[in-house]
Image 1 (cartoon, rainbow, N blue to C red):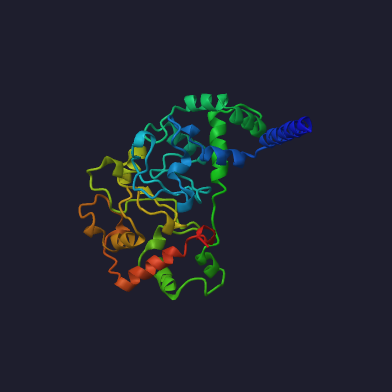
Image 2 (spheres, one colour):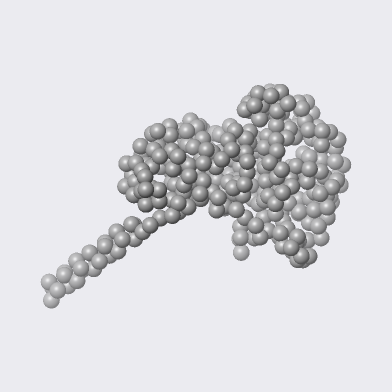
Length: 314
């Protein structure tokens, strides 16, 4: 009886082990591979930082800090933008330095402050990793490379598109989807507050570069697009971000200087009160908006309606 019991245990162990091996060898899709890489700190020099360390899913794939922490606790130069709804963007990063998600993926990995590892070194690491060596072979028929690393993570990022926000339901004909205050805020967004001049299209961005008046000549990081084009007319310009899920992505602006949507609205209401010596501020912001307290609250209420319902805790 004793030997029969031992035989049963050994047989069960072999069966379970065989199942695990088979499960680990399941075909993996390009998107699944990209998702695993996105959340894996193997892509950083000390294996402590992943893409998701700064692009947190619970905050619409943005961060809650003005500047994110990279390897060794170093702080990034700019605020981490949301990685959602970026599939159709023609420019990426605040200064628009790249045009594709595939190219964008590699920049944080190689940045010495962010993930801090050379692309050649991270590829060697992936090629030595049993799982990734097999997964890249399954998906691409090739071993890991910089090109395929970019393709995989970009494939996952393209799945992070959101709709189904209260504003979408309202536009679709459901007049009860947003509050009366948010309706008034929408009217302000489209007209008096001039928000629609920069934030249009389905993702509420014109994909343009604008100087909203945060550059005063002291911090060269704030010279923005100029650092890429070296055109004087681009001094202080930054990419206009999309506003979907904006209520989840505080703090705001490329330098994370505003902690709340209320502070953002207050800034646009009177930029001179914040940066009186701004250089090259856009003409749209040449005069104070003179919004009342109620109008400012209405505008905030409208911005909250841009959050996808699938991201709102039930």
